[in-house]
Length: 197
Figure (cartoon, rainbow, N blue to C red):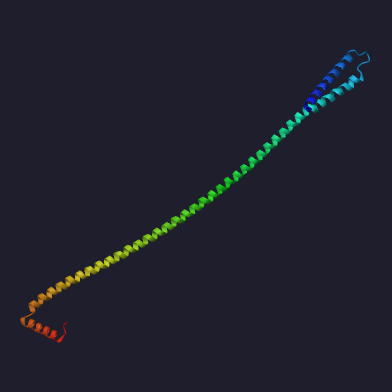
Protein backbone atom coordinates (compact mmCIF):
# COMPACT_ATOMS: atom_id res chain seq x y z
CA UNK A 1 0.00 0.00 0.00
CA UNK A 2 2.77 2.37 0.95
CA UNK A 3 4.64 1.42 -2.21
CA UNK A 4 1.61 2.30 -4.39
CA UNK A 5 1.32 5.64 -2.66
CA UNK A 6 4.99 6.34 -3.15
CA UNK A 7 4.76 5.27 -6.78
CA UNK A 8 1.78 7.57 -7.47
CA UNK A 9 3.45 10.41 -5.62
CA UNK A 10 6.65 9.97 -7.60
CA UNK A 11 4.71 9.82 -10.87
CA UNK A 12 2.91 13.04 -9.93
CA UNK A 13 6.19 14.69 -8.99
CA UNK A 14 7.79 13.63 -12.24
CA UNK A 15 4.90 14.96 -14.23
CA UNK A 16 5.04 18.25 -12.30
CA UNK A 17 8.73 18.64 -12.95
CA UNK A 18 8.34 17.95 -16.63
CA UNK A 19 5.40 20.35 -16.83
CA UNK A 20 7.33 23.00 -14.94
CA UNK A 21 10.25 22.56 -17.30
CA UNK A 22 7.94 22.90 -20.30
CA UNK A 23 6.37 26.03 -18.79
CA UNK A 24 9.77 27.52 -18.22
CA UNK A 25 10.79 26.88 -21.81
CA UNK A 26 7.49 28.27 -23.05
CA UNK A 27 7.90 31.37 -20.94
CA UNK A 28 11.37 31.91 -22.31
CA UNK A 29 10.23 31.41 -25.83
CA UNK A 30 7.36 33.93 -25.38
CA UNK A 31 9.39 36.11 -23.19
CA UNK A 32 10.05 39.60 -24.16
CA UNK A 33 13.13 41.59 -24.44
CA UNK A 34 13.56 41.75 -20.66
CA UNK A 35 15.37 38.32 -20.60
CA UNK A 36 14.85 35.27 -18.37
CA UNK A 37 12.89 35.81 -15.23
CA UNK A 38 14.07 34.99 -11.70
CA UNK A 39 11.59 32.13 -11.56
CA UNK A 40 13.01 30.36 -14.58
CA UNK A 41 16.65 31.04 -13.89
CA UNK A 42 16.79 30.27 -10.14
CA UNK A 43 13.70 28.54 -8.80
CA UNK A 44 13.04 26.04 -11.54
CA UNK A 45 16.55 24.50 -11.38
CA UNK A 46 16.26 24.43 -7.60
CA UNK A 47 12.87 22.82 -7.89
CA UNK A 48 14.23 20.30 -10.40
CA UNK A 49 17.16 19.49 -8.08
CA UNK A 50 14.86 19.12 -5.07
CA UNK A 51 12.57 16.83 -7.06
CA UNK A 52 15.60 14.80 -8.18
CA UNK A 53 16.82 14.47 -4.59
CA UNK A 54 13.31 13.56 -3.41
CA UNK A 55 12.94 10.87 -6.10
CA UNK A 56 16.41 9.60 -5.36
CA UNK A 57 15.65 9.50 -1.63
CA UNK A 58 12.32 7.68 -2.03
CA UNK A 59 13.20 5.21 -4.77
CA UNK A 60 16.91 4.77 -5.19
CA UNK A 61 18.04 5.20 -1.58
CA UNK A 62 16.12 2.18 -0.12
CA UNK A 63 17.31 -0.03 -2.98
CA UNK A 64 20.87 1.27 -2.61
CA UNK A 65 20.69 0.93 1.18
CA UNK A 66 19.35 -2.63 0.98
CA UNK A 67 22.02 -3.53 -1.60
CA UNK A 68 24.73 -2.05 0.64
CA UNK A 69 23.29 -3.82 3.67
CA UNK A 70 23.15 -7.10 1.78
CA UNK A 71 26.70 -6.56 0.54
CA UNK A 72 27.84 -5.78 4.09
CA UNK A 73 26.14 -8.97 5.37
CA UNK A 74 27.72 -10.97 2.55
CA UNK A 75 31.18 -9.55 3.35
CA UNK A 76 30.71 -10.19 7.08
CA UNK A 77 29.62 -13.77 6.34
CA UNK A 78 32.59 -14.28 4.05
CA UNK A 79 34.94 -12.80 6.66
CA UNK A 80 33.50 -14.98 9.42
CA UNK A 81 33.71 -18.00 7.11
CA UNK A 82 37.33 -17.09 6.29
CA UNK A 83 38.10 -16.71 10.03
CA UNK A 84 36.49 -20.06 10.73
CA UNK A 85 38.40 -21.68 7.88
CA UNK A 86 41.63 -20.10 9.13
CA UNK A 87 40.98 -21.37 12.67
CA UNK A 88 40.21 -24.84 11.30
CA UNK A 89 43.39 -24.74 9.20
CA UNK A 90 45.41 -23.64 12.24
CA UNK A 91 43.83 -26.42 14.31
CA UNK A 92 44.54 -28.98 11.59
CA UNK A 93 48.09 -27.68 11.27
CA UNK A 94 48.59 -27.99 15.03
CA UNK A 95 47.16 -31.53 14.95
CA UNK A 96 49.45 -32.48 12.06
CA UNK A 97 52.47 -31.01 13.87
CA UNK A 98 51.48 -32.82 17.07
CA UNK A 99 51.08 -36.07 15.15
CA UNK A 100 54.41 -35.51 13.46
CA UNK A 101 56.13 -34.86 16.78
CA UNK A 102 54.32 -37.82 18.28
CA UNK A 103 55.37 -40.02 15.35
CA UNK A 104 58.99 -39.05 15.86
CA UNK A 105 58.72 -39.79 19.58
CA UNK A 106 56.85 -43.03 18.85
CA UNK A 107 59.52 -44.06 16.33
CA UNK A 108 62.28 -43.39 18.85
CA UNK A 109 60.39 -45.29 21.54
CA UNK A 110 59.83 -48.24 19.19
CA UNK A 111 63.53 -48.26 18.28
CA UNK A 112 64.49 -48.23 21.98
CA UNK A 113 62.02 -51.03 22.69
CA UNK A 114 63.28 -53.09 19.75
CA UNK A 115 66.89 -52.58 20.80
CA UNK A 116 66.05 -53.53 24.39
CA UNK A 117 64.20 -56.65 23.19
CA UNK A 118 67.09 -57.57 20.89
CA UNK A 119 69.57 -57.10 23.74
CA UNK A 120 67.39 -59.19 26.07
CA UNK A 121 67.07 -61.89 23.39
CA UNK A 122 70.83 -61.82 22.84
CA UNK A 123 71.48 -62.18 26.58
CA UNK A 124 68.89 -64.94 26.87
CA UNK A 125 70.32 -66.82 23.88
CA UNK A 126 73.87 -66.45 25.20
CA UNK A 127 72.77 -67.71 28.60
CA UNK A 128 70.92 -70.63 27.02
CA UNK A 129 73.99 -71.43 24.90
CA UNK A 130 76.25 -71.20 27.97
CA UNK A 131 73.93 -73.49 29.95
CA UNK A 132 73.74 -75.90 27.02
CA UNK A 133 77.54 -75.90 26.72
CA UNK A 134 77.84 -76.52 30.47
CA UNK A 135 75.37 -79.38 30.21
CA UNK A 136 77.25 -80.84 27.26
CA UNK A 137 80.56 -80.51 29.16
CA UNK A 138 79.02 -82.10 32.28
CA UNK A 139 77.49 -84.88 30.20
CA UNK A 140 80.79 -85.41 28.40
CA UNK A 141 82.67 -85.43 31.72
CA UNK A 142 80.19 -87.89 33.21
CA UNK A 143 80.30 -90.05 30.10
CA UNK A 144 84.10 -89.93 30.11
CA UNK A 145 84.18 -90.85 33.79
CA UNK A 146 81.74 -93.70 33.20
CA UNK A 147 83.69 -94.90 30.19
CA UNK A 148 86.92 -94.57 32.16
CA UNK A 149 85.44 -96.49 35.11
CA UNK A 150 84.07 -99.18 32.79
CA UNK A 151 87.38 -99.42 30.96
CA UNK A 152 89.18 -99.58 34.34
CA UNK A 153 86.87 -102.37 35.50
CA UNK A 154 87.38 -104.22 32.26
CA UNK A 155 91.14 -103.82 32.55
CA UNK A 156 91.10 -104.90 36.20
CA UNK A 157 88.93 -107.86 35.32
CA UNK A 158 91.21 -108.82 32.47
CA UNK A 159 94.29 -108.32 34.65
CA UNK A 160 92.65 -110.29 37.45
CA UNK A 161 91.71 -113.07 35.05
CA UNK A 162 95.23 -113.11 33.65
CA UNK A 163 96.74 -113.07 37.15
CA UNK A 164 94.41 -115.84 38.26
CA UNK A 165 95.20 -117.81 35.15
CA UNK A 166 98.94 -117.36 35.67
CA UNK A 167 98.77 -118.01 39.38
CA UNK A 168 96.64 -121.07 38.74
CA UNK A 169 99.06 -122.25 36.10
CA UNK A 170 102.01 -121.51 38.37
CA UNK A 171 100.36 -123.23 41.30
CA UNK A 172 99.57 -126.27 39.21
CA UNK A 173 103.15 -126.42 38.19
CA UNK A 174 104.50 -125.89 41.66
CA UNK A 175 101.88 -127.57 43.86
CA UNK A 176 102.45 -131.05 44.74
CA UNK A 177 100.12 -133.61 46.08
CA UNK A 178 101.30 -132.98 49.58
CA UNK A 179 100.63 -129.26 49.32
CA UNK A 180 97.10 -129.95 48.20
CA UNK A 181 96.42 -132.25 51.13
CA UNK A 182 97.86 -129.72 53.54
CA UNK A 183 95.56 -126.97 52.10
CA UNK A 184 92.52 -129.21 52.42
CA UNK A 185 93.28 -130.06 56.05
CA UNK A 186 93.82 -126.41 56.89
CA UNK A 187 90.54 -125.56 55.29
CA UNK A 188 88.63 -128.28 57.12
CA UNK A 189 90.13 -127.37 60.47
CA UNK A 190 89.26 -123.75 59.88
CA UNK A 191 85.67 -124.65 59.11
CA UNK A 192 85.44 -126.78 62.20
CA UNK A 193 86.92 -124.00 64.29
CA UNK A 194 84.44 -121.53 62.82
CA UNK A 195 86.97 -119.26 61.12
CA UNK A 196 85.36 -119.64 57.68
CA UNK A 197 81.73 -118.84 57.42
